[in-house]
Length: 151
Image (cartoon, rainbow, N blue to C red; front, top):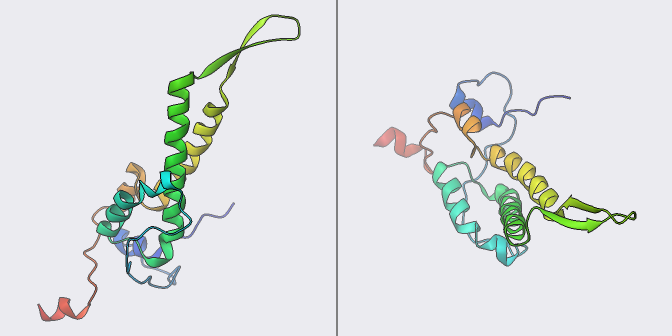
């Protein structure tokens, strides 16, 4: 399987600028209002994540759907964990022979699946330790490039 291309802003930060840009330079984020499609549980995570990513200078208007997916996945992972805390990780059932058997609660699989997706999305935004190590020292992104020359 081919490796995913490294985003252009990460190439600049890590010093790997050879080759053509992998995407156009994104427009900076024009607002941090959550999209209408977010559920109420995901909407609660939007302000913190949007502010964090906008502060890092890596969030653009084109990333809002991916950020919404990150919020939904985080909310799903938390909700599955709360279900497990209330009902336990296993439940008891009877086999056809009448023996008692313990099975994993369905929320365990839901939490594990959400954790895998959450890990992937966090990595895409550079919010994991290994992703951060590849992006040491984010540049100070200015809205107006001329201010760098005239200040």
